[in-house]
Length: 484
Length: 93
Image (cartoon, rainbow over all chains, first blue to last red; front, side, top):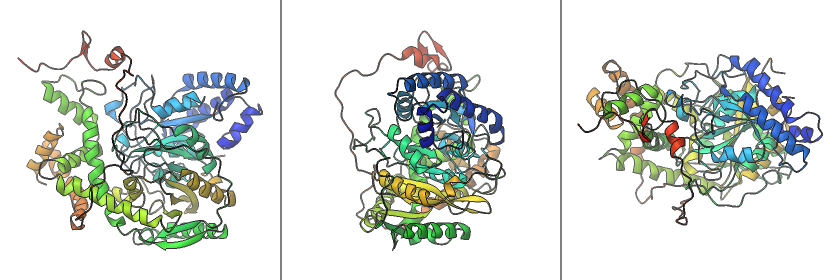
C-alpha cells in the first residue's frame, strides 16, 4: 500500500480496495515500526488519525467526498495543530499545544485528509541539515550516516522512507527543495503569498512559504489544490485565482524554453550533480524543449543578502518568546529581565540565538542602512535578474544543491559552510518565485535533485514540466535500499 | 566583534551568553558578518529597497469583530497565571 502514489490511493479508496482506516493503520504501523531509524516524526497522532480516517470512510461511502478524502498526510511541526503539541523543533515550544489550527491544516481537515503526526525539523526552520532540532537529527533513508537536508528534513525523510505518502513543509531559503533533493523526492515551494502563512510559526515573514513534499509531481498538484487558498488572516497572502493544478499535467512541453543560468554551474558544484542535471536537461530536449544559456548576474549576493534579511526578520519574530504567555519559562526568575533572558537562553539553541543576534545587529541604530536597507536593495536587483530572464525563457533549471547528502558533522562549526548549502535555492525566496526539486539521478547511491524555477504563479506550468519528466524517467520511483 | 560588543548585542536580544562561550560566539558571528559584508561592494544607487516580492501593500478590512473571546484558551497554555492574568515577577516595589 505504501508504494502507491496519492493519485493511485485516491482511485483505490473509491474502488474499495481498502478503506481509509486500513490505509491509515498501515502507515501508522510503518511509522511505529521503522521511524526509530530515521527520527523523522516528533509526534504520532494515532488516535486522532484513526478517528479522522473513520470520518473519511463515512464521507467516501456517501460518494460526494473531496478528492483527497481519506488520504494520510504528515505535517511539519511548524504548523499549528489544535490540541496537538507544535514544537517547531525547539525546547522553547516543547510544551506548546496550540489552541487553533493553521489555515493549511484547516484546509486539509475540511477535505477529509488524515493527519498521521508531526515531522521533525531544524529548530525554528533554521538549518540545512536537521542537526539543530531539539529532538535530535533526522537520518537520511538513503544513507543513515548522512543528513536528510533541512529544515524540512523530517518531512523529506518520512516520504522517502514510504512511512508517509506525503508531508507538508515550509521553505524560507531552500527548506523544501534542498531536503527533497537530498532525499530523492519531489518538493514544491509555491509563489510567495500563494499559500497562507497563518498558523505557520514565523521565521522570516517576507520569505517564508508553505509547500509540499511528495513522491511525484502529480501528487504535489493534487495536494496543492487544497493547500492553496486566499486567506484574509495572512496580510501577505495574494488574492489571485487558483487553478486546478492537475489540469495541465499531461500537456506536451514541446517548445518549452528552458533557461540554464551560467552562475548555477560554476565553481562549488560537484561533478556528479552537474552530470545528473545535464542529463536531465537532455531528457527535456528529447521531449521538445529548447535550452538557452542565461545569466542571473547578482546570484553571488543572494546568500549575503539572505543572511541579513532572514536574521533581521527572525530577531523581530522571535522576540515574542518571552516566557510569559506560552512556551518555555526558566525556573525561579529573579526579576522580569532575568525571566526574559534565561527563558530565551535556555529555550533557544545555538544557531537560533546566533541568528537573533545577527538580526539585532543588522537592525540596530546606525547599522540599519548599511545592512537591512542595503540587503533589501540587493533583493530588488536579484528579482530584476529573474524578471529579465523570464522575458526570454519559460522556466529556469539547475541543480538544487551543490552536492548530494553529506555526513553528519561534516560542515564543522562555522555556520557559513552550512549557509552555502542553499546557494542555488535562496535567490528564489528573495524574489518570491515558485520553485521545485525533483529527483534526476543518483551519485554514489545518493539522490540528486533538479531545481525548476517558474515565473510568479506559474505553479501549474512547473508541475506540468516536472510531471512530463517523471512520465519519461524512473528516478522518482527509486527507493532507498531496504525499503520495499 | 569583541566580547563587549557581543555582551551588548546579547542584552539587546534579551539573551544571556556565559562568559566562557563569549569568544566562540564572537568568532562565529564575525564569520557571518564577514559573509554579509560582501554586500557593501554592491552598487545600489537608485535602487528601491524591496519589502514584498509582489510589491503588495497592506490590505484593509471592514472594521467588524471577527475573533471570538479566546482568553481562557490562551491562559490555559501560559506558564503562570492568576485571576485571569499572566503572572510575572514583581516589576514595581
